[in-house]
Amino acid sequence: MRKLIAGNWKMNGAQAWTVKPAGFDRIYAAQDRNHIDILICPPFPFIRELFTSAGGRNIFVGGQNCHANENGAHTGEVSAEMLADCGASFVIVGHSERRAAGETDTEVQNKAKAANRAGIVPIICVGETLDQREAGHAESVVENQISGSVPDGLTEYVIAYEPVWAIGTGKVASVDDIKGMHAHIRKICGATVRILYGGSVKPANAAEILATPNVDGALIGGASLDMADLAAIAKAAG
Ligand code: 13P
Image 1: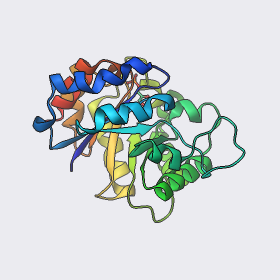
Image 2: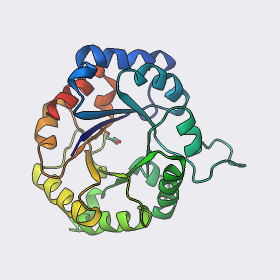
Image 3: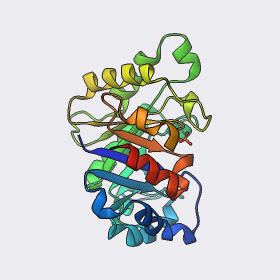
Image 4: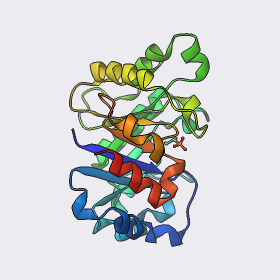
């Protein structure tokens, strides 16, 4: 399966960062990475210009969230159609930082449907908390999130497994934990869905994580802000 190396800039960046794809390209040239997909998800205001600077470099651009509706009286929200109009090919939905703020499986499912309606690919995030893992419930939590968040009949989507306790903490799930959870997700979602791992992925641990069975890429927060790190992770995808 073609690996997807996806950067989630979260609420970081500036208009000046739209030169970053050129920096990435200098380190890892487009013609050398035809076998993998690179994606950067910046904050909304930078999507259009990043798309312009990244498009010719074979780097996809995506959103970090979207609203379920196409338009309407939803102050402060952005629809999947608007993301597509700005050049986005993907949108992250159900990130744990949004679930922690109250986003439910049903809302995530509606956002994934909206992405599909707009012709962009949803990256549906799932992952357990430390308490849930320690109680032995990691697999059932993730299974419930998938059944609640993935729309029935949807075929083109990506799952990002991000254990909440590994995000931004420097703690990475063990290779055995990743292997077990990704095999579990594979059984639920089938052979054609790309399953990303996220949570403190760095150049130093990327090769081992990306070589784990059923890991089809990574969703990277902190390390995606630095093009040298993001390129090193992409190179580690083999
Ligand atoms: P970090 O790579 O900073 O741990 O963030 C992971 C993440 O939340 C990506 O969506």
